[in-house]
Image 1 (tube, rainbow, N blue to C red):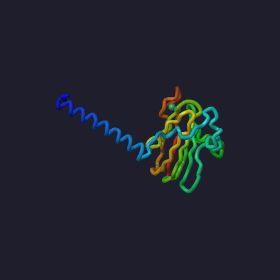
Image 2: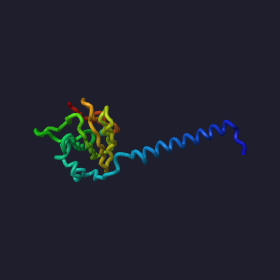
Image 3: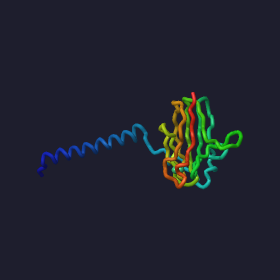
Image 4: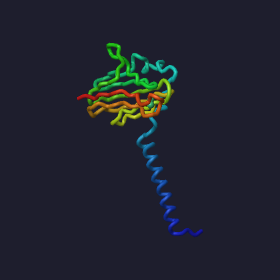
Length: 167
Ligand code: CUA
């Protein structure tokens, strides 16, 4: 079979691109351990309170060690439940010291929501039936808005909360 010179060049280019692509994906998956955040831990979407982390009294910020925190979030249309403060008011802003190690854990009571701490790499999809979690270190002081970045209904744009990282 005779192949034209240009055909050979394009064929090699195509195969080469495929090899590079598979290598990049394989490197990410097998060496760097990149994988979807959720699907690890399941939860009853009709009763997320049955999971210890999502009981009303465990929502929001919990200090587990020096500079180490867990933040549990119950998402629902169109609200992030971050627990209550001492006066019984709903927490809308979470305050953590700079350099804190934070384990974010989110679950949804209804539809798919997003959980993105804008300006950081904390960005999770929150799917019914699963606990989404992500661990990060909050290094940069500032005020960050938590936004829902999955369209979840008429009040989607109203779904937000705030994180303040202080010095
Ligand atoms: Cu929740 Cu969009």
